[in-house]
Amino acid sequence: MKLYDRETSGNSYKIRLFLALLKLKYEKVTVDTAAGEQKQAWFLRMNPRGQIPVLEAEGKYIWDSTAILVYLGRRYGGESWLPLDAADMAEVAQWLAMAQNEIMYGLARARAIVAFGRKADLSEAQAAGQNALNVLEQHLQRHTWLAVGRPTIADVACYPYVALAEQGKISLDPYPAVLSWMKRIQSLNGFVGMPGLRLV
Amino acid sequence: MKLYDRETSGNSYKIRLFLALLKLKYEKVTVDTAAGEQKQAWFLRMNPRGQIPVLEAEGKYIWDSTAILVYLGRRYGGESWLPLDAADMAEVAQWLAMAQNEIMYGLARARAIVAFGRKADLSEAQAAGQNALNVLEQHLQRHTWLAVGRPTIADVACYPYVALAEQGKISLDPYPAVLSWMKRIQSLNGFVGMPGLRLV
Image (cartoon, rainbow over all chains, first blue to last red; front, side, top):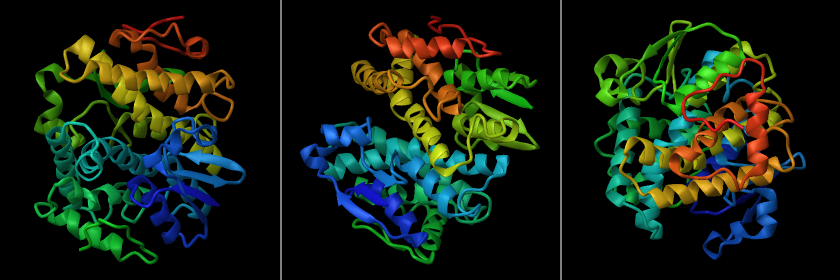
């Protein structure tokens, strides 16, 4: 397998983290997104959306971080990381949606503005990010993991931009249950980090 | 089953459409989102995110439109609407991600600004929406359905806000392959519409 990624990308880190948890070997290809390589023809042939990460596997190009987590979970994780029961799968999918919506357009966006100079409204992004953290905090006060009582791709999808939130000047201190969950993720066998993560 | 929804919500329509395609009976509960009912305590107990739609099924509350599509597809659709093969499921998941990202923050947002007075940057939303339509157009020039060669929840997830795009003052005329795909969806057995859809 070959992963097209960039070290500082939280979406790419989701995949590196999950590959490490699954103990899978892969080749890494760094895409120079600052130079716009992801919008060049060779990249758009792999991913019409022009975004990293892309996973090359089984002769196919799988784009979108959530789709790649689904692929790896189904292909290598049995029913452990992505359960097949309808209600259980939907429970995982709920938090995958949070990762793609509030977490992406709140926490990840705030980080992109502060750390990478992206032009967008910082206070709007921070407010959306805090909303996401409030929902997570409330849920994690009563649950060890986001879905179905064990680690799933829901945790892997939500963790990176939560743990990177302080790069967007959003403090995690008001969210003790979120911090405890982060610590449980860090303790998973095979865990790897990335620069800028708040480690607990 | 009970669906908490609102007639004008494209995310709620995704579920009504899929329930109709699956020929499932359900009870509808209208949530007065204009009056903020979705932020009241009784609703937040069902969905901490405070958003419609919510599906009540098997004694559980399933929130998030994508998660509900996953639930219904797995529970009632065999492998037809949501395949279980890893690469096939990932192919579906790619377009679910498009529905939740570019389509939501482009097409749906532009519609919310124009039709419901939401305060946000219209030209930014329209540009993001056109990017999504360009990706769809390019893909649908070579494919009949978004994923795995047959109708899946990927089509159901992407269709509503595409077919509602003109309510956000984004013309669909430049996208003939998208219009043909819309026509194929309209022709599916059991199809139902909603106000504001562009019918082909």
